[in-house]
Length: 77
Image 1 (cartoon, helix red, strand yellow):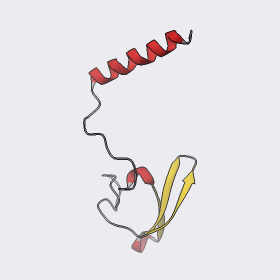
Image 2 (tube, helix red, strand yellow):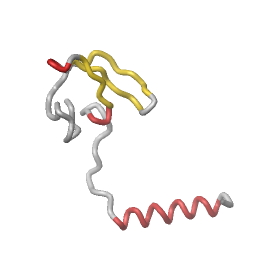
Image 3 (cartoon, rainbow, N blue to C red):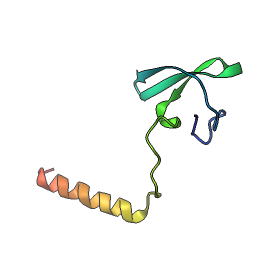
Image 4 (cartoon, helix red, strand yellow):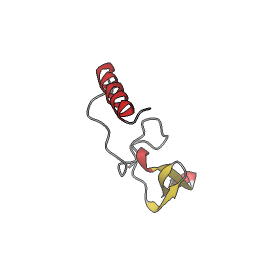
């Protein structure tokens, strides 16, 4: 199923023909009906990674910045 909210086939189940590794990541080739076959990034489907449960917040970014800073200081960068 196409899960990307702005894709013209969002919410539709498409027959997967094959999966391929591309420079930008993995993608599936699907039958697109009148559109012919099309490649859809795996992340835009229900086969991709699950969406995060909570939105990215300011507090999460501050925590991430602290972790990155700690790792950099350990490695002398």
